[in-house]
Image 1 (cartoon, rainbow, N blue to C red):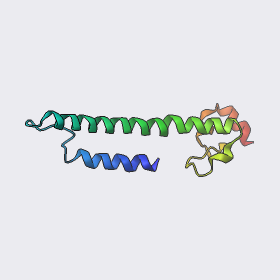
Image 2: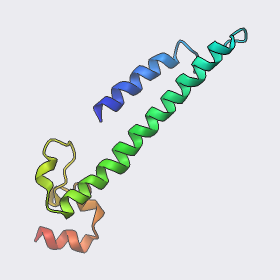
Image 3: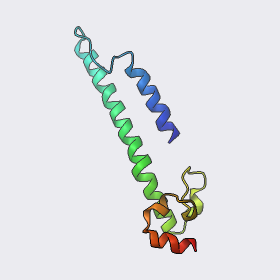
Image 4: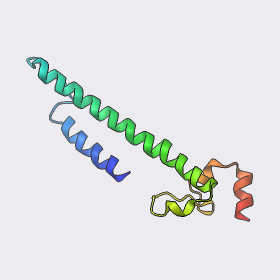
Length: 102
């Protein structure tokens, strides 16, 4: 997840001198193509980070807990532990969470 943040910051630094990837009026086709590709790269990178951080990783946490493999999640950065309110805890109905806590 940290790599997504670092890459996003690097892409933002590219956006500044390009004025948001706006091709100058006298820019040639190669110039336009470069800026379009940079804008596309930034958009794809943001989508990739969002999908990993907010869809894939939480789903993997839920599956690991469901399958009893939460030991493989050590160091992942999110608590799959039901007692600590991790992603797996939030994915279950409250009565299931409560029964596991007691």
